[in-house]
Image (cartoon, rainbow, N blue to C red; front, side, top):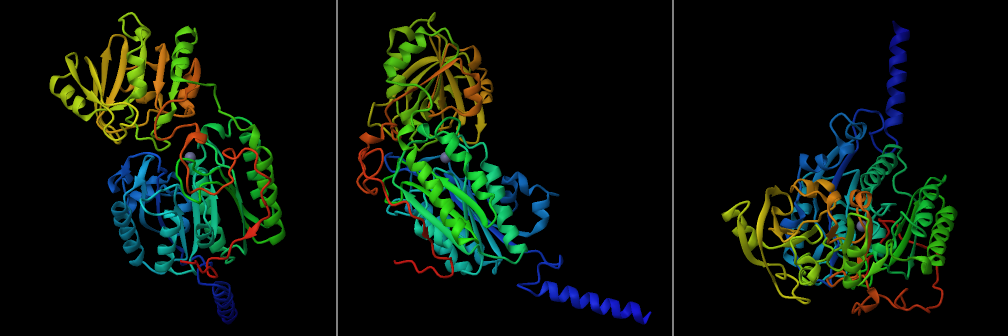
Length: 527
Ligand SMILES: [Zn+2]
């Protein structure tokens, strides 16, 4: 009995000693307390559109956890910590965020964080290309204000889109920072999960913040349509990231392509490697940056490109159905207003599309709330006419008058709210109440449209998302007008850093030496 009693004392002393290293979390009784916060949008400063707070569909409390499949009830990650959701918001890409919208979201996010201080960790889930009217580094501002609330002791793990931008402030105040490794972003959730796992591992092991962050700015700015990881050289470049991150002494490694449709000094490519082995962190960053720079001239569009007239002529000649044409200049998922009418105006004035016996043509999509309202009043099968488009971006063509028969109406879409298919001759034009991207086959079949059987399918999109890519007979990217013009050389940049490839084609080789970013508790931003 006495023996058993001494054993219990020894065991409890042992548990106490184990648990009191950095905190009391590793004894299995109390879990680390980790906040979740972030705002995600890529917003074009070349679009006249302005994004307001509601576009972020802000999530609070349990809704935040519900966004991430890896936090499902009963999952290992869910059980591993006490998760404290502050606020997350995700918007479709668009124009710059209004200052009022940004301030209202940030105020709520910070107020929520203040209620549950202190935190062991914070999962910072952002896109990284949020332009806010009058600000140059919105995510840098956001993380600075988060640090003012939670302090610099909390470990922050930042997860981003590879089209985001990394400033010194963002890199310094993040202890772990990573981004997707695939474009299209089939690994989005996997990347977020990696950011969360790494954060947990650092906290649970007591290792805390990694000791080194090596960062290299690369003076390259390319559109996503040239940097897909499905094809070379993006494929080989991004294939290096996983093995680089898996090395002993490295926690994570990431390459950002950057966002080309904003005119801010931070818009360029970047490499950041985080870890505890200074030498490896530096050399890994330098090797990734060098590989990127050396491949710069090989980046090209992921599909053939053509002017709109050429694209239509190619589609009409082709026997491969459906012939998919990307209406790239006004791609809402890159930040276009999504309501430029120039392309649709030109198509419908082409004689080939004026006959009931013309090619089966599906167009996705154009916002037209007034016409949608009229369609709702008259109903399916009835004639309707009204103006669509050019409410936000009328720089290229005025609102377009459409006259046809209501073919289908669907209500309740999260983005579009109401979708109306208008049949004009053999053309099926999708008119929405609010803008919406059409990336999935069901986006069409839900409207009783059969994209696989269409002759020509035209979508406001850049590179095709996987489902459209898989159903295509053939595909061309039309270099059309809009806020995300693919011809970057023509964009009126004034504030990005120069020289920049490919704007300054013959520029000299840049300095690709890794620079160590200050750790979050040592960083003193110069305001
Ligand atoms: Zn992206």
